[in-house]
Image 1 (tube, rainbow, N blue to C red):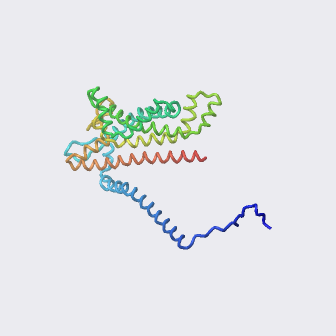
Image 2 (tube, rainbow, N blue to C red; image 1 turned 30 degrees about the vertical axis):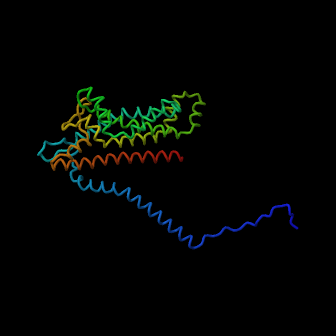
Image 3 (cartoon, helix red, strand yellow; image 1 turned 30 degrees about the horizontal axis):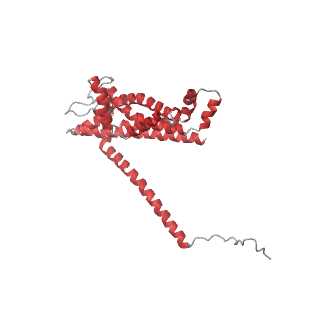
Length: 302
């Protein structure tokens, strides 16, 4: 006889199996969501594929040895190339990287390791976020006012500084985020061995986060590689060979812009070829980003 003081417990019931109609509805929803995902992927890839195909169609035929070895010819003469602009872009981007990357990494280290919770760190972080959204032409006007006007002439150094201003906020925020992913136990282990804090930051924390930091630097490099507006106010352009930092210098984006707005068909042809080379450079930088990212993921899983 059951004890009346104990509560009655219903026997466990087997879970109901979904009906055939319910399974069909789930299958239809799954197919619909998968189809939408594939459609969204195709919509993302379509503009890039269209640009690449059109650039190959318009510019590949103009790529030859002269394009990479000769400067522009005078108006009315066929041939010539953009060798001076390619070299000039390399010089300007090298100056921007030498200036912008160390400053950005240093600011990111300060925000992550030494300035947590301070008012000054919050100001620096807010400033970096604002600078990331500033239009490039505004950066060019600022560089013109601060550098070109004081020097009384355009120069490759001014162009490199303008691009460096644009690289710093991206590198700063990326470095801070990558250092934040390093476990605190790594820092504590190094400090427990008697290693000074500054050396722990440089030899342990930065080395651990180096794949992500390199990725951020390459992304910043790819962003400024195709900028034209800042160079209009700083480097100004040059139709001749010039590799001095104190003189106006040619750059690939700037040369493409000048040729594109000109009324000459020969310059239009070279502009398409230059655009193809420029997009290839940016895609190469993006590919390097993916390579370093995959290596970092493999190291993290190992």
